[in-house]
Amino acid sequence: MIAQTPAQKRKSQHGATLVEYAFVALFVLSLMFGISGFGHFLYIYHAISNSAKEGTRWASVNGATCNQDLTCNGTNGMNNDPASTTDIEAYVRARLPASVVSSSSLTYIHASFGTQTGSPDVCTKAVTDTTGASYGPEAKYPGCTVIVTISYPYNFSFPLLPTMTTTTAPCLQPGWCITTTSEQVISH
Image 1 (tube, rainbow, N blue to C red):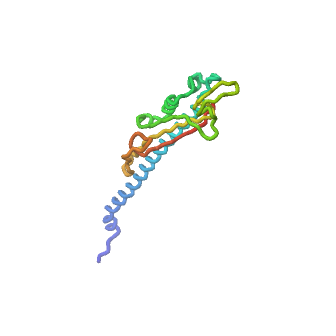
Image 2: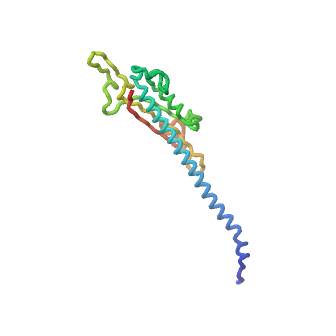
Image 3: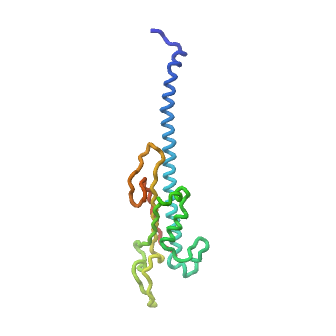
């Protein structure tokens, strides 16, 4: 058996280096695109969660009694009247980032009013005060709650991750359904 010189050994391994580089490059690129895709997923989740919280905060200060002290005058971010569900949904849609707004037909936004333990009776039934005046039921009254739900179907652009082909409620299109709900007590 004839011993190979170091130059001959290096020459015979040129193809091996190229194959090793291809495997490492494939792994590194997959890792980078995967991190980028999951980072965008988290960005979208944070953005819709923040928009839902902003919507409930805005609705909680635009409740049924905001006209009594004239704060519902349309200035400084206030509404002209107590906020309706369509007002809240429009406010939330305006707070969504551009990447979500550009696909607004995909975004499901639902606002509603509700009650929780300790909510005043006026939220669900008519009540009479000590003067004999009757109020309610008024779901926007202070102490009642406002609930905003946002759903967005997210599709990863990275080809190694599975593509969702089914639509899950409350999302309107197929994709990984990101859903967030914010609930806040009406304070005004």
